[in-house]
Image (cartoon, rainbow, N blue to C red; front, side):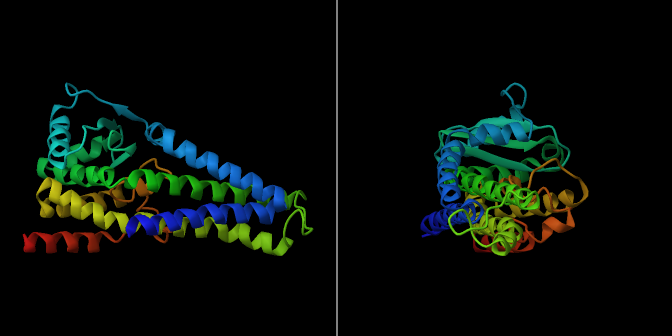
Length: 282
């Protein structure tokens, strides 16, 4: 059911993207937007993992360079019954982690240097279990496609704004809609895109917490890790884009007050409460 709901949301985002293109450029704009959406989905499927890793300046490490981290990832991957993902380290002080890849056989787990210094080995296992759960559930591909389309809608709205300001907007019925309607859409289109992206991401964080805790075998350690990571993210800034912030285990932009209004993550307190309840049931 979650997969079906996610498909509907992604379909809505694609159609919304095409509709915005129609408001800006009429029929030609709709066709262009549709072709662009297809190309974006293709690009996101095959190359999004490389783009995300490059954006975060993640560096692939060998077992000799990070033996403890490698040992945790290998052991939990075997326990989860999935191939060993590639391992990356991000040279950032904010403690955080994310996973990427289009499938379990083409995946990667990345952690920051800050998280390796902050968490105990047991807490780090909980975090790695969470990221492996995302990979196993194929959440990463869905979230990346959603982020790609959301970013494109925002870019389209910005382009329309500049066209409107410099007289490039065509207002007749064949070439576009009413100028006032288009102006309103320029303002709300990015917000709608973010809201849909939030709907895709938030529902899957709870599932990844639960499955990740079962993979690691210690819900309480993941709960403790989330608490530490949340507090640290509010104090230590991190170079991250709003388009990729939903990939991290905790929102790397938590410290920015405006971004709190559009967080792609569910409340940390509720995530911790659910994990603690799992511990009591075990």
